[in-house]
Image (tube, rainbow, N blue to C red; front, top):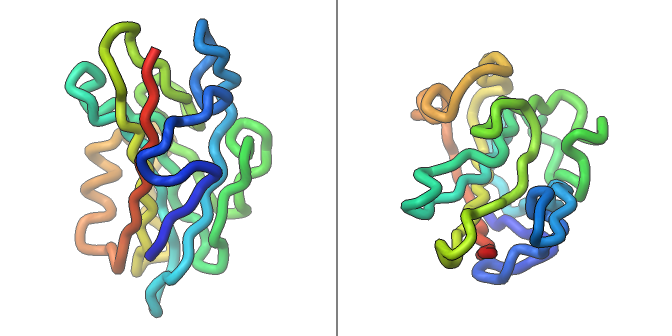
Length: 156
């Protein structure tokens, strides 16, 4: 599988995708497209995580139950009622469902915002909106046919 966005792997995360604050963030969810998906895929799920030691694997976005015939999420879809039909956003470490852009503590250097999309062999993960990342990881275990990852860097 291949995951693409408006930025390339290892690029700087455009400021408009950062959370609201002094860096000019607009908290707009980035666009993602995936291709070369495996035969037998019944759904996709997506996660954006900041794995920097200071962030302690901070969850910025969790999307599940993306239908197998959907291969993208449009820019700004989260929070705008434009998520793919059937897709479901879970609660992030910001305490609410939907995209929450990066806002790393000043002076902590570059944080890697890793986005991963998984092709799954089930149509639904059957998780509730308040499910956390540990429950998400457990739900996809043994159900992944393939995955693709894209990481952008951001600091303030």
